Image 1 (cartoon, rainbow, N blue to C red):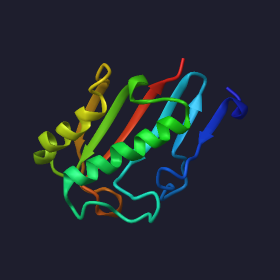
Image 2: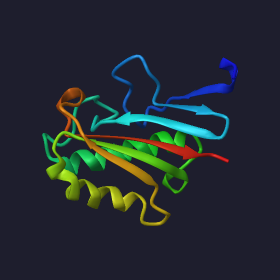
Image 3: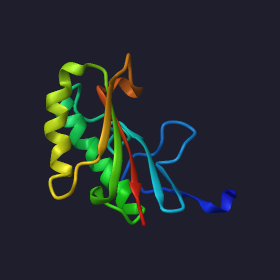
Length: 132
């Protein structure tokens, strides 16, 4: 695979990366979306003040913006990974997460507890989508 077959996705409708990575990368018919935390794309400030429901809503909005910028949507998401600081938030996150997939087949998913997330977030979500 040559570097010319790799395309970076960038949109102002989602937060700018907080490190040396892209919001998403397209390789052939696959879209690999970087993990999103609850950053407001306009201010780059965290949303929710440790309210996992508000954080998850912002994250799903950010992911939707990246998917849209790549010509995709939640309907094409194949796999997600959810990172939680506290697995006790599992049900609250599930409720918000499910709203994004109510009109499509829910993707395969992993959910893991982590010690910490960037900017003090309580949740981070990434995804892979099929563009073909």
